[in-house]
Amino acid sequence: MKRILLSFLQIGLLSFVCQSLSAHDFEVGGIYYSYLSETNKTVVVTFQGDQFNSYSDEYSGNVVIPASVTYSGTTYSVTSIGDYAFRNCTGLTSVEMPNSVTSIGKSAFYRCTGLTSIEIPNSVTSIGEGAFQYCTGLTSIEIPNSVTSIGNYAFDGCTGLTGIEIPNSVTSIGDNAFSRVKNVIYSGTATGSPWGALNVNGEVFEGFIYADAAHTQLTAYVGTIGEVIIPNSVTSIGQYAFCKCTGLMSIEIPNSVTSIGECAFSGCTGLTSIVIPNSVTSIGWSAFGYCKLRDIQVLGETPASISETSFSGQSQYHTTLFVPFGCYDSYAYDDTYWYKFIHIKESASNTQNLSPKQAYALKSATKRSYIVYDAVNDAVGDIALDANIDEDNANHNWQVIEQEGKTYIYNIGAKKYLYAEASVEAASVRISPSSFASNVSTQWKLSSTPIAVSLSSGESGINIENSGEWLFVLNPTLAVDENVSAIEQLETNGNAISDKAYTLQGTQTSVPVENGLYIRNGKKIILK
Image (cartoon, rainbow, N blue to C red; front, side, top):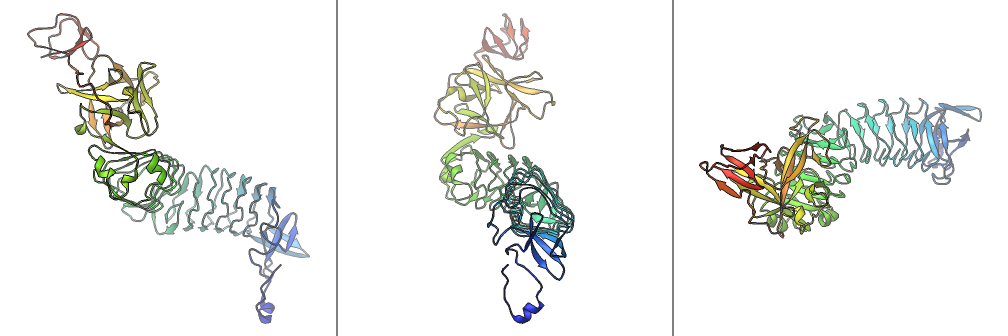
């Protein structure tokens, strides 16, 4: 073992203190040790040889580390797992540590991909940098409340973990300590991000970490990931707040947020769509970098300030950017890099912007789903298409007809009218609006005769018959049928309809006398 020669005086006073990267001093029972203090009779578990990569897989299977070990007649206490001790031991499956261990060193179990089980004793106070990095076989691990610090990248890449709870005793968490770990739970007093750096003196509430008591500055989220709704008290989303949170599938940003910080959602590869409210005025560098976004909906008529790298280059080439009606030029010729998006489409997200002279694709405001006419089955299809819907296909496009105070949605290809019917029966195409009971869904249907629908403006789209919010995406290339009309005949009350007719609800009436809209012989008539 190499030791540093300082002076004869220091040699006389110095106990056998070794460096963390030194060779092992002895081996007992298949475990390698280095002296930590000859005076205190303590040793550290280490690797075999002069360097950590001198041998490969020197540890395998189940390793039980004793609390003490005897060598050459002297008994030593085992107090720590040394730096790189088990690094790259892919054959290691489980480790049992004694209560005498107080620290786990740097990269101690780095890339031990076969490790499925490990118990950290309640004596451990620190977990070093990269200690369990890329231990992909770990499915669960319990951090005891004796631990106060967790180093950079300590659990980075432990993709097999289904959840991990950080005890309140922890006050220091390093950069990217839990990067790519699902369901990180923390209720302590640190701020920052489990995918970034945590500092002391923050406030945790319902899984969110804030920099202030008013909960306006969101710095991290440590609750259950998947679908996350940010509280409407938040005005800013901080740097690295959700960085590398690969399990994040959807995020709802409230209209109170004005800024999104650098790398806030960088590396969130599970995100495929995002809605940016009109309150947002600035989006930081790489805020959505390395995301696999297919749809971005911006609600602001004035483009937010962004940098050249706020969105990844791939997003700018492959993502469809949906902008408010009449705002194409504002984004396509913007001087803050929105113009880099290849696919920019206008969408009417409120009823005031709808025009009967325009063709529209109907896209869900919350997911990559479109309502189209399925010609094969002569039915409505609710399908997930690629970011760019087939603009030339008339079956994929709709026309809005306004007449006599009523609204009709007409499929240009099918020449039929769309309506939504509440139903408790199973159906292949369903939307589940919150306004209906849990066992009731809305089934999209088509009618050869006009059926009026109710439209209302929502927060991010237009609500059709209480069936969720939809974007009416402008199609500038497809012509509409300007001759189509929801009313085909007008009668006065003095000429009551003598033939059998039907109300829009399907009720037959032989001689209707009340003013209203009726269907007779397949034609629409209005009695007034």
